[in-house]
Image (cartoon, rainbow, N blue to C red; front, top):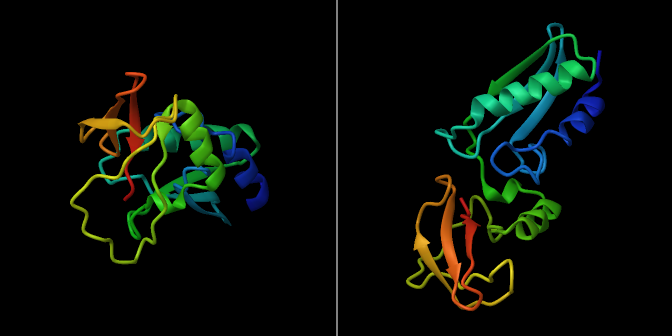
Length: 162
């Protein structure tokens, strides 16, 4: 039987299927792990309730923990509290940038957000220019937007803060 610490360590190597440079733990979607009489219980909160990768993530978690020695794994989805980009660990933000996705800015999940009439200037993850423009509110997934750098002309995605 795996311990909770061993399970957390194992899940550090399970990549997010949509952004494989960060793990499910770095993304902050694994909320808790506990040993029960029925094996391991892993609680996950998807990035949004309609995330198409939810089942793939649950299966990847199960497979990794079973391979590591767990007798049984139950993955439970919990939608409340809702996932927030604040749960992404700092090291993963840099991995996102290196991968070509601008990470979300940090925000306090329960703090009121300022009303913005101008979009924030995003720095291109390739050349660093802040002369960028939004092409689409939605990128490859609903949690990302598509931008283009006007300096190097390369497209990139922005992981929207939620």
